Length: 122
Image: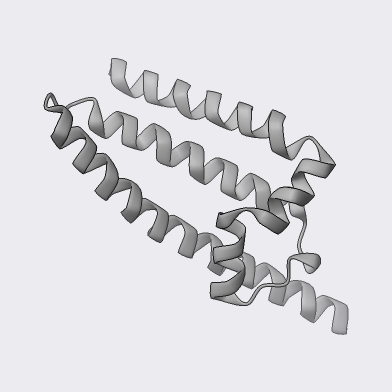
């Protein structure tokens, strides 16, 4: 139970830091949308046009997903005693979570982009 509370606190702290540093500041938000690896991977994979989408919404999706991944990996790794095994499981779970969560974010953003395009055409 204690590890769960720590992982929730870590997730909240990571999100707050992400929010203060990137989402609140318009210049950093634009730089994040144009230059970050996360957004570039999703943009290339799903052929997205970020100009049609709200940039704060995109950054919030990535902030929430990244903070969730960090908290979940912390929670999983705290039960393991061996450091090498901790690193191995953290790497494998992090890679798996990135693929699953980023693909879902891409699908959500593609759906939102298509909705926006159909609203503009009407």
